[in-house]
Structures are given as C-alpha cells and as structure tokens.
Length: 221
Ligand code: PMT
Image 1 (tube, helix red, strand yellow):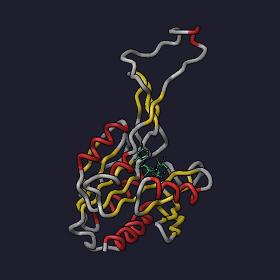
Image 2: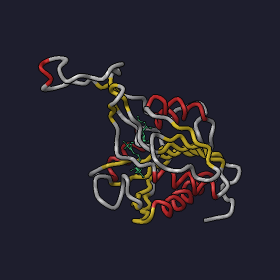
Image 3: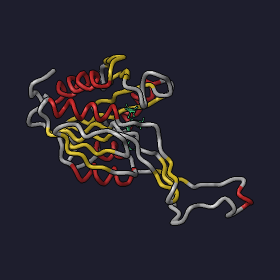
C-alpha cells in the first residue's frame, strides 16, 4: 500500500492505555505501550488520511501528519473521542480501563487508615464503553473497528464483542504471551467481520497496520 489511497478520509483512532488515579501518587493501569495504535495512525497519515489520534499516557513520538490529543483516564478518552467525531473510520486500539475507582483520594492513601492497614479495599465502578458509544452514535463512522485483547478463546470472545458492541470489524489479538500483544514490536491479528476472518501476521506492528488498513479500505467502498 502507498500513495494517497486514503486521501479525503478522516480516521479517528484511540491508542495506548488509560490510567485511573487512586490518589495523587497511584493509579490502576495496563500494559499497553501504544505501539499498535501509533503504527496504524502513522500508516494512515502516510496514505493521505486526515488522522486524529486520542492517546493515553505513552512514551512515543507523534507520527508525522497526525493530530494527537493526549488524555489520561477512560473518562477523558471518551470525551476526546466523542468530541472528535465525525469521522469516516473509528479504530479502537486503546486498552481502555473497564473499571475506575469510585472516588479519587485528594491525599495519599496511608497504610494505617483502617483495619491496621493489612488490607485495603478499593471500590471500582464500570467506565463507559467508548467503542460501543461510537458505534451507537448519531455521527457513527462508516467503519467502526474494535480490537479484542484476549488471553484465551481469542476468536470466540472477539466475535461476541463484534456483535455486542455493534461493530463492523474486530481485530483480535492474543495477549499475555511474549512476541505479540502488549509492548512487543510484533503482533498477530485475526480480523473478523460478520462473515469472514483474515489472519494477519505474525509480523511487525508497522506492517500489520498497513494490512489492517487495506481491509478497512475495502469496507469503505
Ligand atoms: O499498545 P501496544 O503495547 O502496542 O499493545 C496493543 C494492544 C494489545 C493494546 C492492542 O492491539 C489491543 O488489543 N487493544 C485493545 C485492548 C483492549 O482493551 O481490548 P478489550 O478486549 O478489553 O476491549 C475491546 C475493545 O473495546 C477495544 O477496541 C477497546 O478499545 C474498547 N473499549 C474497551 C473498554 C472501554 N471502556 N472502552 C472501549 O472503547
């Protein structure tokens, strides 16, 4: 792929983790480095798309030509993504926290607070599902693609998410193993829609990004 085959298309993409603060010094997060989402944003911009990327806290340089909005929490990611609509394509590559602490302590949580400090109970509440909200939005992009990060039964859970969240496509990847998923430079994807499944890789995330965009482009027509 190359040239400007995505010129005139607007791609909105989320990338990286979210961090859910417990107090001024601690948070609940996950292992996403942002590499997968940044690779897709970079490839799409190279191919002429107008790319807006909402990025969680990661240590990666902004790819050339990409407009980047930095966020920290799942709530901030939701506001930024919904605020950046409309788009032709939405790709949810971020690992958004499913739960966030009910309250954020204004002061550092101390060990001696209650019960002698041997245990600490934190109450978590569900976050909004950004991907499902984009798929149900009045300004729904023509193609909505989610990711599914699973440790087991990857394809079955991915198909379930495709239907439940109202997606056009889902890119399933295995996490929790070396050489794919979180943090690695490489990955392997199974891209699923209502009728087909395409295996991509194992390959570098940069190469997978272009292959994934080829499949997305085919659905835009
Ligand atoms: O960042 P890297 O280190 O390169 O790793 C890449 C990756 C493994 C993070 C990436 O390939 C990936 O799988 N991203 C999705 C991770 C994830 O949160 O998967 P999930 O199965 O929990 O969520 C399913 C989908 O719903 C995802 O598109 C996610 O963005 C979306 N979601 C989930 C929860 C939520 N509250 N809002 C969402 O939008």
